[in-house]
Image (cartoon, rainbow, N blue to C red; front, side, top):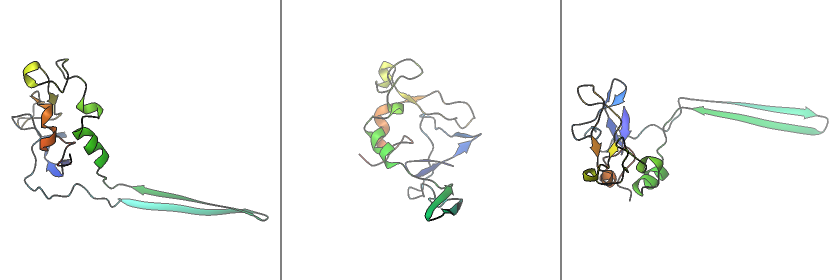
Length: 138
């Protein structure tokens, strides 16, 4: 599963599933977990080196796994400050331009029949919780 604004997105052949409108298909549970912050495993090494009256102590601590939600990325994307909310689309037009002018954003994924998504969506929909990097935070 992938996650979009806190909702799970079904995966089809390793790619997120996109509906006929070009947006990711989301599970209906709006209160689903974004992820699990608990690491898969943790470990550490502590050692002390002594020479005469000098002592050197060091600790190496490792955590592997767990999910973290990047709220800064969420706010930046909602404000249009991140690279994937600007730039040019497959038509060479600015992503932020209206669809009528050739603008729009392409959600990477596949449709229900397994074909790559080719439908551009309006970038102004970012604050409608339809993008994987948007939420109610505005």
